[in-house]
Length: 187
Image 1 (cartoon, rainbow, N blue to C red):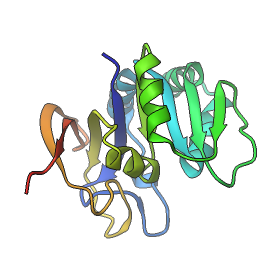
Image 2: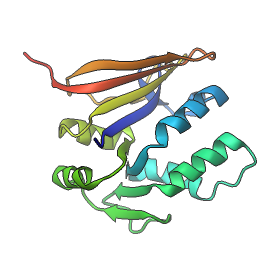
Image 3: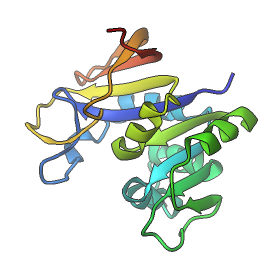
């Protein structure tokens, strides 16, 4: 069964970027990067907002001798991408289409027709997918750093029941957590 997943690398205090918009503290070491590559292999389609797409588009032209980076670039290039933006006029990468609005019903339809998993990237777009009940799993690599503020990994105002499916500890102190999204909290 195809899953829609939201994956992030976050600080211990729950941010994907610090107050200055930087995320260099989240760059994975080789152990974490190899693990993330394996997590991304089943993804057939990435859903992005404009900012996340602009960051990730660098993988299209990535030319490196580093095997882990080259591997991830190949995984990323092979996948379809859907970019949601009201301001972007065109996309710069192959296998990419532009949508001007996030339509939960269209994503449900995409999911129903997909043969491979779908990943939503970036906390802004993920907030829309979570609010619409589209996300099946949340994957987070928690890095051993506290940044004190910035862009939160998860949106305010959404409460969900989560079921821990998997966990892994890394030598660098990072921890991977995989949760099934089980629905809204009962009140």
